[in-house]
Amino acid sequence: KKTTQVARMHNPRELHSMVAIPGNQVFVCGGEQAEGTKLDSEMYDVEHDVWTKCAPMLITRISPYVALMPDKRNILVSGGVCTPLYMGSGQPPPEIYNIATDTWRPAPQYMAKPGQEQYAVIFFYNEKNK
Image (cartoon, rainbow, N blue to C red; front, side, top):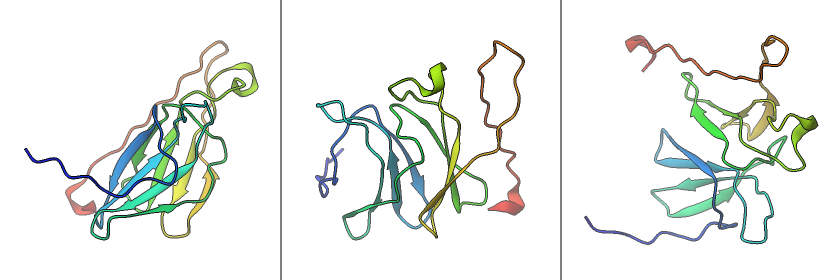
């Protein structure tokens, strides 16, 4: 296969996550630079070969979990690590990015039993939701 070089990101990074977005875009968030600086998010436009900075996440993360939500208008970002450790637990709470408005909001959290720090993301796929 042929490899094609694309435009440079605003902030090259490692330990990041990405997800494909309808409309030939790729959303990238989290990670760190060689100096250890945690980063926010960027959107890559495949057709125009351009990176655009997005609104800052509520909590910057290293190696977060990222998923396009079934409505295809929002992105769920959860888990990952932030330093100093988030409130001592090491697990920052989930948040949701709205693609159209370039805004973040806290995601609903569900109570776990004492001593448990687990998050699960479950999407139900329905042919009608395409």
